[in-house]
Length: 183
Image (cartoon, rainbow, N blue to C red; front, side):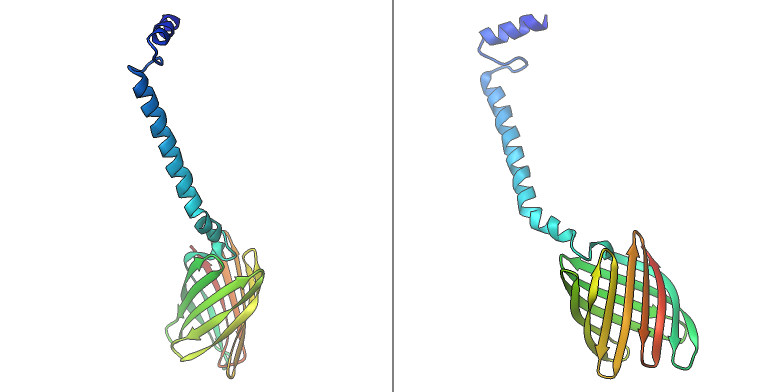
């Protein structure tokens, strides 16, 4: 029966399952147009997709957690923290806010990676201090130095999947912090 329909369609100048040759050609034109739009969309979005896999891609998003902060008088306090990383290719804007009952800091930064070298700026709004960030990092591990007039801090940041650890050591009233975050 199927073979007989194919012969009849061929005799009538039509493809099997289509009422007219124009219907067949219209269907092919629609499929080609859909493929062209799809290829065009992928082509225009290729730079954005490549940027999404940049050096900071594993950090993107909001992270929460806690840890401890150490002060120069030897005291330590438990802190709650939230970090937000806005990643755009080789650039990243970050915000890290941590607070305890008696202590708070709000760190913002804007960094850029060139290979494994990282440079940028930072500011801490509650103490009105700002400076430069420099360091290296790849594969979710970053070693940075934050410096300003009268202030230097070493920052180590490690990310593995949905877990992140941040360790800061400074030579000021704020001696350091150890923070564990998840998303």
